[in-house]
Length: 411
Image (cartoon, rainbow, N blue to C red; front, side, top):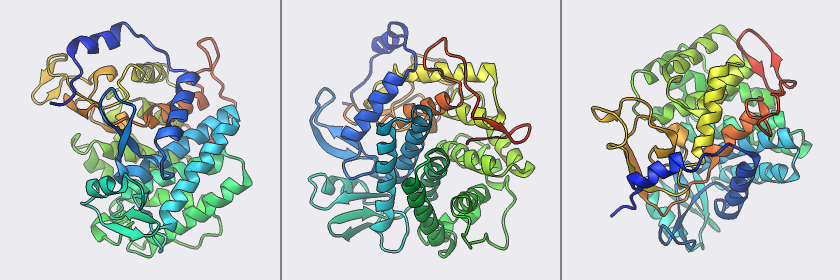
């Protein structure tokens, strides 16, 4: 039977343990990521022997490792800009090295989903989990192929942020090299991360433009130009907002528009972003809220919501017990009538990419989430002045440059 988080315990989590998002929590999560979640240099989630055990018996969620390593790179880059911490800089370099390893192992500059030491006791389990993707042997490694656009978007989200926030010559040089290799592969393989035309960036004009903008921003001498014919910028996002199916699409949209809008403030790009924002603004999503802060500037109600939602994240279980909210919230058909409160949303890898109206989900209480869904919006919140180092600290907006009525660029 799945490890079920009881109704009484859920109530206790919400009522008895109020929390406020803080540096201390973010730092503890970062330390735990380095200790438990990067056994081969990129983000993976450990599997424990039981819900109460600290014995790691495997690793999971390898298929999205490139995506979450990119998000982790962004988080630690924001942290470094806010704190100038040597530890944050070390984490930036570690994440960057991990992403580089995902390119080096493939032999042709494509991005692998993840990489695992072939002699690891966890290798067989990971290969079994990822059997639906192609597993390659590249001694001393195995790597997972069939890379989706998602992984490239996540990597470029982190690379773009890190390049502008981490003023370190070695880091910026490594980012320039990696971004150039990645966009070069995509451009010469049908604008696809894996030679599959059905997975081509030609179908996502906003993602394709973001890749080219970030790559040329990082490497101004880059000679790659876009395809001759491109779809209108709002084509794909207009389909996205027809429903909540594959809700992670919105997470990718926000990652994409963050770099796209700060590097290019054309009205067509902004209008496409607003299609997504108008649809998701009521979904109580801390990550989406802080991206909107970067795009549209201060909004007291939204910014207060972001702080509250992130603080509520601290009341969630760190592992993946099965949660069923059908008796806890009003139900409309197969979904909640309103966004489920953050503390009792079903457990997952990155909370903000999941449908907030989902009623049930999770696992057996044995997989620990990395916590990138906390540290990324947290350090972005600190950077943009939405979250202060203490409750009385006024927001610091000295780093924000207004480019247009709706675009603000990080410097």
